[in-house]
Amino acid sequence: MLKITDIRQQTTPHALVAQAERFGERPFFSMVGGKFATYGDMELATRRLANAFRELGIGHGDRVMIMMANCPEFMESWLALHRLGAVTVTVNTAYRGIFLEHVANNSGARFIVAGAEFVPTIVESEAACAGLKAIVCVGDPPAVSTRLELLPYAQLRDGPQTGIDVAVSGSDISTIIYTSGTTGPSKGVLIPHAQLYMNSVVYNGQFGLTQNDRFYSCLPLFHSNALIVQCFSALCLGAPVSVAEIFSASGWLSDIRRSKATVTNLLGVMTEFLVKQPPTPQDSDHDLKLVCAVPIAPQFGAMFEARFGAKILELYGSTEANCPIYTPVSAGRRDNSCGKLVEEFFEARLVDPETDVDVPDGQVGELLLRSKAPFGFMAGYNAMPEETVKSWRNLWFHTGDAMRREDGWFYFVDRIKDCIRRRSENISSFEIEQVIMMHEAVADVAVIGVESPFEANEQEVKACVVLKQDRQESARDIYDYCAPLVPRYAIPRFVEIYDELPKTPTNKVRKTELRKHGIREQTWTAPAPQRQRRAERQSQ
Image 1 (cartoon, one colour):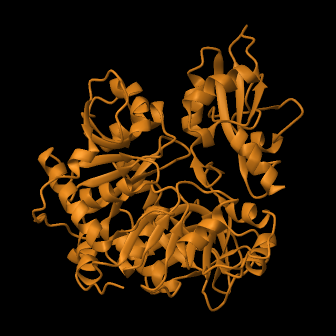
Image 2 (cartoon, helix red, strand yellow; image 1 turned 180 degrees about the horizontal axis):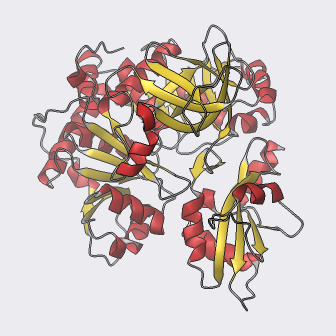
Image 3 (cartoon, rainbow, N blue to C red; image 1 turned 30 degrees about the vertical axis):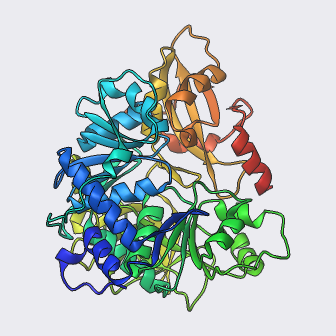
């Protein structure tokens, strides 16, 4: 692990250059089954790319969006832009329309580095993104009519090899990752370089990982888990990391073997899907020793360990606040618990969410957190000062998560806010409601999360819709309107037409009452997409 004594060295550029000097010929990054880029290869590639970006006018503090599926170019761009002190803005590849436009406008990005397959989606929103000037296209650009300048990524790779003399500090913002809110638009989390480094220090330290370990990720690089917790943690160790294009329950074990991985992460129902795959005598024939999964359903944790012969442990974290709670390797799993506080680096309290007064052990309260290391947490929400102040009320970060603590172990109970959690994605009910309200027949709408009848420990999205007087649209009509306008994971699986929505005296929708309704006889159910039908069959 890199030994850092200076905040100015807690950066991705310092880590990459230092590891290239120490381990130049050691493999660093590859897609599963593909050729590894060594640490030396990555340092040279990102130096040339950074110089090419600089010639485009990108400099310290500039925001640049990255919209790509998992690929080597994602990692190259992320590291190269950081070498200039630029701020990368990772974009969920399912974003389109107002979701994509909000990220572009809120971040203030002038450039977006994008896979060729996403160029038409970007062009569709160009009129609403006045600040966006150019697309750096990875792959052959499609034939589209656009005011945006289309720049070939392949040519930028031939940039000058001269050294990068930009000073980057651990206190500088490295990345903005947008997390879906519940009462407003998605919030851009401002992540300092030191927070990236802190994440890797804690992850590697808690799990006892070394440069001899091999990382594998099947999660999207636009989220913090794959990008920061796994890829950057591998970089800080000088270890190799293999990345899959997507998660496949049937192909996961083959990927583990091909990558010779010793450590990996899972989210949501992935653990359940893997356990429910047909067993084979070779299920424990691999090098995997540790799996970090969030969450671990009690009925599947023991089954996973017995079948695959790898220890499976849980942690708790967020994009804003790092990963402050880990299950100790020496203790092993404890059902329904996400672990213990890493007291060397973090402070935590459980409080009454209305008063911020501490609650006793065993009682449910909101989790509040602080970092003991400088710049170890987010620097705020981009261009949302009121949200930043609210989240840091009384100088503690308010997670919005309800937990209880017993004997030093933390147990996650529920989200205090109205966020919907589906297939490892946080979904903003507000943003889905905005889309549905654009339908000319809709008078009112509330979007809620309901317990999935198809998968344990999962939520589905339900839209509760009130039509305008004399309109006769069906639930299917509302679904057909909404489906092409929102990310696939956020499309409502259930739609119900209401005469009116239950409201408070101040005219706020009582979503608690709607959640009690759940899925009723009058609730329309959308047909599952082919991929989801396969997943549901695998989980049965």
